Length: 164
Figure 1 (spheres, rainbow, N blue to C red):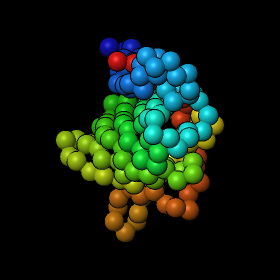
Figure 2: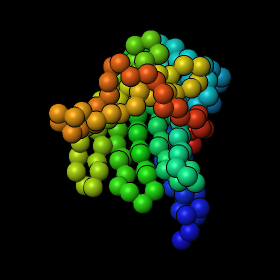
Figure 3: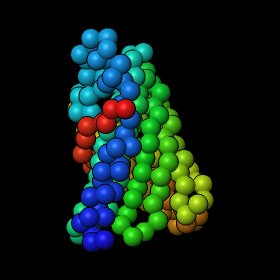
Figure 4: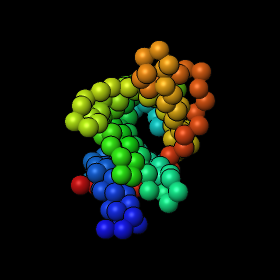
């Protein structure tokens, strides 16, 4: 299988893993708000769950991909975060945390090489755009960390969430 075919399959798999129940709930109730809109504006604090999906590709041939699906209800954020570098070990897992303003402070519980792990990740969701504070290595522990002093510099592109 060539590189482009592999990359296309990975991207499609990431896109189809996004489940958007909210959009189908809105279509049955006639609500036309942006709650199920992956490219909508800033989320509002309502009892209604809002879903957003994002994709980041990088590498010489855009072969590395990261996929984020967020579900936001009031201040609670849940979701999926999968980092899939080409021909390297992927990190796939779930997100859980809080939203304050447009900042999402989350714990990413993931598996890599069959081993469970967690990391703190911090995103900003503003005007339908998702940015992340980059991970850096703590020289004392050798572990990746999110530093509060880091700027939001990792950009994810909005993609449509796929309905059930």
